[in-house]
Image: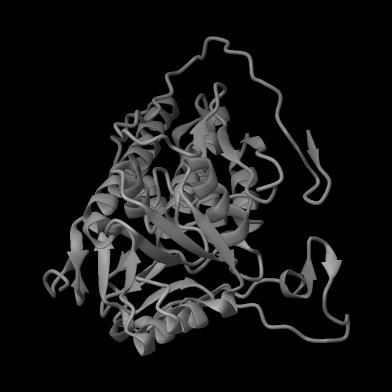
Length: 382
C-alpha cells in the first residue's frame, strides 16, 4: 500500500526466521484493548514504527534499520510525542550499532557516541529524548573494560527495552492517578495527541480517559484539531474512534465557545518538558487553552511521566522552543493555503505558566510544583 501524500510504502510481512539474539518485548497487563502499538522491535532487530504521517488514511508500519533512519523519523514526525521519542532514540542506538557487535570496543563506543549526538539534535524541546540518550550512553560507558562490543550491545538492547517497559507502566499509573478526575458523563477537552501514538503505552493525557471508558463511565472527548499538523484530528480522534470512545473534532478556535457554554468539564493535555516551578511546554496552542480554562473556571490538568520533569530548569523561560518549517503552516495536505510571498511563524510548542495549571497528573499521583530532583515538593493537588 502506498500513501501518495506522504510518499511512503507499507512494509510486507516479515518472515519469522530464527534470530542470533533475543529480543524482549514488553507484555501489557492492561485489561483495556490498546488502539495501537506505536513502536516495537522487528524480528530482525530494527525499530518498527507506525508512520504517523499516513494516519488516519492508512496505518502503515515501517522498519527503521539504522540510527540514521530513526533520527530522520523523529525529525520528520513519522513518530512524535515526548515519551515515544525517548523510547525510539534508545532503540535507535541499538539498531544503529548491531552491525558492530564484532568490532573493537573503542570503535563500537565511538559509533554509539556519534549516533547519540545525531539523535539528540533531532528535536530540542522534549526532555525525554536527552534523558533516554544519556541513560543509554551511561550504561555503555559503565560496562567493565573487558567487555566486548557484543556484550555491550546486549546490555544496551536490554536497557532500551527497559525504558519501553517503564514507560508502559508509567502510562498506566498516570491513568490510575487521573481516573478520579473523570466522572461518569464527563466532557473532556484535549489538545494534540498524548495517547498510545505518543508513548510506549496507553498515553498520558488520554490514559485516564481510556481507564474511565474501561470502567464503564460515559465520556465524551472534544479533540482540538491542533494546527498546523493536525495531530488532534488525525491521531487522537483516530485512537479514540478505534477504542470506541465518543469524540468530536473541533477547530482549535472553538474551545473558548464551548467553555463559555459550559460544555467542557475539564481540560487535560500532555507535556514535552516541565520546569522545576511547574511551567511546562506542550504543543502550540496549549497556553491559549489554559488561559481560556482559567477565565471560565474549567479545571486544567497536565498529564506526563516524571521523566518529563526537568528539575535543572528553574522555570519555563529556559525551555528551548523548536521552530519548524514554514510549509507546515502555509500548506494543508500538500496544497498551498497562503500566498507564496507571505511569511509564516511556526513554533512547535508554547510554554504554559504553572499558575494556570490545576494539577499535574504523573506516575506518582496528582501533584503540585515545585519539582526538584524529579520529585514533587508541593504535595498533592487539591
